[in-house]
Every structure is written in structure tokens, then in C-alpha cells.
Length: 182
Image 1: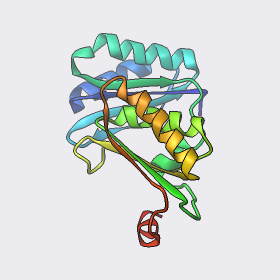
Image 2 (image 1 turned 45 degrees about the vertical axis):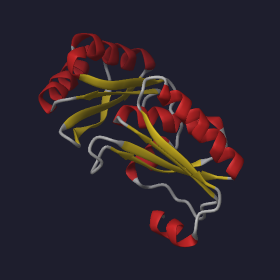
Image 3 (image 1 turned 90 degrees about the vertical axis):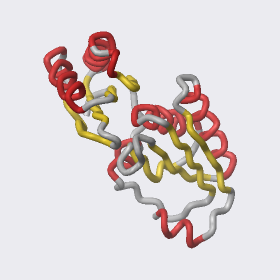
């Protein structure tokens, strides 16, 4: 994987595929994920050198802004992002539980990156618009102070663009709830 990742999220599948092709022709990047998500939106997640990812995302933003929902570019994404997306994170115990929901797929990855870089927390899961009517959420754990700081930073990051839906911090979640999450 490259040093940077970027994502665009479009209202329609046809525009998403058109933009994916355009971005691949713009610079040397790799598609990490390109697919339809609920409710019929299309996301393209790219990786590569920062300058290449930036060129691709900027081309998508300016060339097809009328169908764009959200986008981001991260120069050095936190290493826990992809295990959380793909459900391969190994967590033994949930101390405090942080939950954050957004209106877009792109914004949840930005929120997760901010949270993971803010304090000593472990990302449990990133649910990206699948089965969520286009919404996304993240789950993270750590000690209560770290979780509160991480959720506060994540809220700030996605609240600026109006994509924050809701958040909660549970200080000592019930064991049955933890078992259902892990």
C-alpha cells in the first residue's frame, strides 16, 4: 500500500465507475476498494503516493462535483484503519466503548483516522454504508479518557463538513454487549 489513501463517494453507480476510470488514468494509484454501497451510492478508495492520490481525488472533485457526496485524502493513514474496515481487528476486551455515526462513507474513515491518532485506542470496526442506508459508523475501545478524547476529536473532524450524525461513549459496557460486538 502507498503512503496515502483517498476516497470519493458519488450519488450514482454510473458516475462512480466513470470517475474510477478517470482517476486510474490520471495518476499511478491502486484501487483498494470500488463498489456500490447503500443506497445505490458508489465509493472508490485509492492508495498510492500522496501526490498521485491528491491528483486523482482533485480531478474527481472538480470534474464531477455535481454528483459528489464526500471525499478525503489522508497522507499517512493510521495502520488500524484497514483491519477495522475488513473486520480483522483482534480485540480481547472492551474497556470503554466509543461509537460515532456519520452520514457518509468517506467521513467515517477520516473520523477513524483522527480518533486513532489522537489517543491510545483500538479501532474495533468501521462499517462503511453497507446495510446502513448510506450511513457509516465506527466502534473503538480503550480506557475511558482515551475513548472520550478520541471521540471528541473524531466529532470535530467530521462535524466541520456537516457529516456527523451521532456519538456515544459507554464507560463500562455490559459483557453481553461486548460479546455481541466482538
